[in-house]
Image 1 (tube, rainbow, N blue to C red):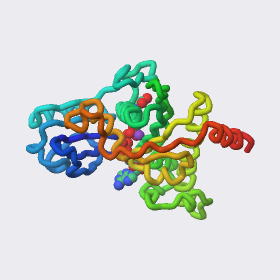
Image 2: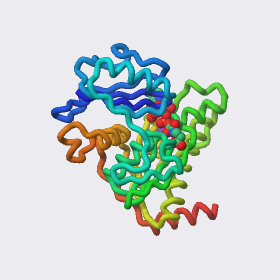
Image 3: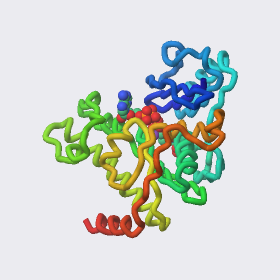
Image 4: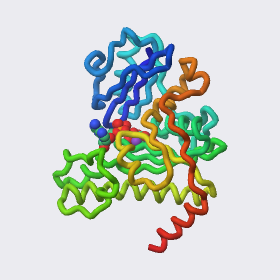
Amino acid sequence: MILDLDIGNTLSKWRLKDAESSEIRSRGAVWTREEWRPGADIPDLDVVEAVRISSVARAAVLEETVTLLRRQVRHVFVAHSQAEALGVINGYDEPGRLGVDRWMGALAGYQLAGGCCAVDCGSAITIDFVLPGGVHLGGFIIPGLRLMKESLKLGTRNVAIDPESEADALLEPGRRTVDAVNHGIYMAAVSAINRIYSEVCDQQGISLPMLLTGGDARVVSRGVQVPHAVWPDMVYGGLEASFPLTFAERAGKMSGAPRVPEPVSLEKIRAGLAFSMLL
Ligand SMILES: Nc1ncnc2c1ncn2[C@@H]1O[C@H](COP(=O)(O)OP(=O)(O)O)[C@@H](O)[C@H]1O
Ligand SMILES: CC(C)(COP(=O)(O)O)[C@@H](O)C(=O)NCCC(=O)O
Ligand SMILES: [K+]
């Protein structure tokens, strides 16, 4: 079995992948914290022959995790942001400073779709752009839904947006604090994504397919007008592409990859942008 780990600021996600059949056998998530407790937190390591890790948690969390895993697992691969990999050229002035989850998303998105806009809706919402030739332009970082809500300190912290909520309802004016806050932060997130996408496509003169991932991807997806696909395993896709272990991975296949969405014409994007600037 292969254990894939995606350690975010809020949640540490894991999945077990069969090295022979490439099937996903199980998956789960635990709160990211100082120490990693195998057994309680993750499945039995006896069946694991390789681990692949993407972590944006504090260095100490990763160090502890790696030390622990190395005792029981033969191959431990840790992803790092690089200046260039798999045809993608990192757009950061200091490539190593780009969050490795964003780098994994950019690599996966490029491998799947060529040029793309990769949006990760987690603790933060990150919006990254890769052009068809592999040039990563850099991106945008805004607080995620939960962080935006907590920053208001209006006592609505523990009332999360129901992931099943319809965008139409979330975009109405709220008539009580919790709704006013939820609808406000939702509008902030989806309008930022829509606008940033349009601005960058306009600047670059190209309409790019958009891919969405992260804990809030499903609910955010309902408010994003741009054609896009939700890919919950996008970060894992970057790990698969960076450290291919199975037959399917060596052939370039990434688990759970969606169909590439057909982007709208650049003219339409520009018309929408021109209209929103009039308002
Ligand atoms: N069951 C859940 N538990 C915690 N957060 C959730 C859950 N479902 C959705 N979320 C949302 O997803 C976010 C965490 O998403 P995730 O992509 O795992 O973030 P990160 O990678 O930063 O840890 C939370 O901030 C919250 O808004
Ligand atoms: C921007 C992030 C905090 C997002 O992390 P997440 O929301 O997935 O936990 C993470 O990618 C990070 O720590 N990046 C380093 C700074 C940067 O990318 O510029
Ligand atoms: K994120």
